Image (cartoon, rainbow, N blue to C red):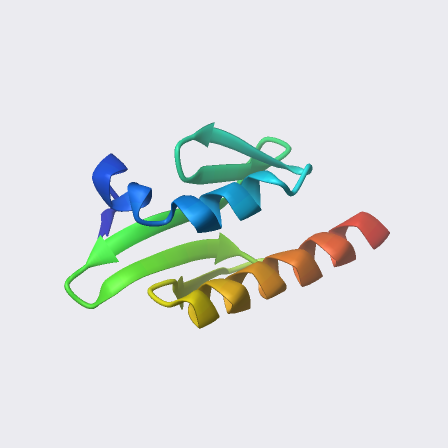
Length: 88
């Protein structure tokens, strides 16, 4: 599974804009988000579709982001994790 290309990431513009609104996230390059200096979220493409790899604790989780509902699930999980992180 390869990292999502710039062209592919254009199809996720709405999702990327929503992620950019999370102040704690820093986008080091298009579609690659960090929390402080640690990689947190990036995107992959393969024949099955688009996926986000997101670090929700100790391990990476791979979540599909092909539909609006899948993107909402990702945003919800990101927000829950960031809330926990802020409370720690």
